[in-house]
Figure 1 (tube, helix red, strand yellow):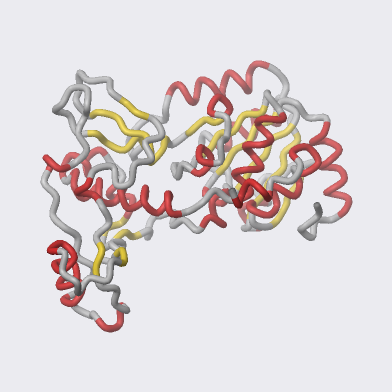
Figure 2 (tube, helix red, strand yellow):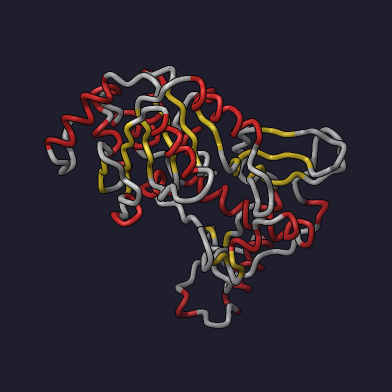
Length: 325
């Protein structure tokens, strides 16, 4: 199933090594989901409305304005659910079924790997998930995984109203009228979702009582189950991946859509090499992808959504039918 212009020598050597590889570790970043069309809000300059997205991803922001933070994460949940897993997600899920000692460590929070039916025991979430929630009450231990309800509570529904080109509404006055009409059920609303990532589009004020509440203790606010800035990475996830790496030699490491330059990603690449792994990097950015390549590594330049199903085909077969189900 050759789809990509991969040098024949690289394709042949990778295929030969893949077929005899049993213990495989994949490290995934935002590039895995690129062809699913999701905004990432990564790094400085990533804006949501007039807020730098990173400023909303802190415990302090949630404490100060839980409604705004929940509106941001509800928007991200909605966008992720609107998107579909791409062939790369399905390829990794199928590889997990074919190779019981294959483990994926993903930095993504978008839930697309889970929706591609990646076996949960072989999928580890370094930064949590948009679709996990937990109670913020100190003495309450409630948590829930894979809550794909959208909106998670009615108050967080994406507002609908009259869609207007940005150039026709410089002040946001028309959008405000449209939102008011939608909230009143006025026929002036055309039922289209408003793009609330645009600061010119007004968003409703939400009281704390209407935010997601804990069903166990009945008083604590629920929060998104993602790792915010200033918080520790999940101990259970780190321990599970560390155990996998330390248990035995590793045959192959896949580095997908990430520069793997930041701890702990960089550490896992080096530890895998120490355990005997050959490394295959799949990245659309040549500069990111070719950093720290060692002799015997492979670099596959392009979108993971097309590259991964192609290079894994000799083991996983054709997964294209799964993307249309």
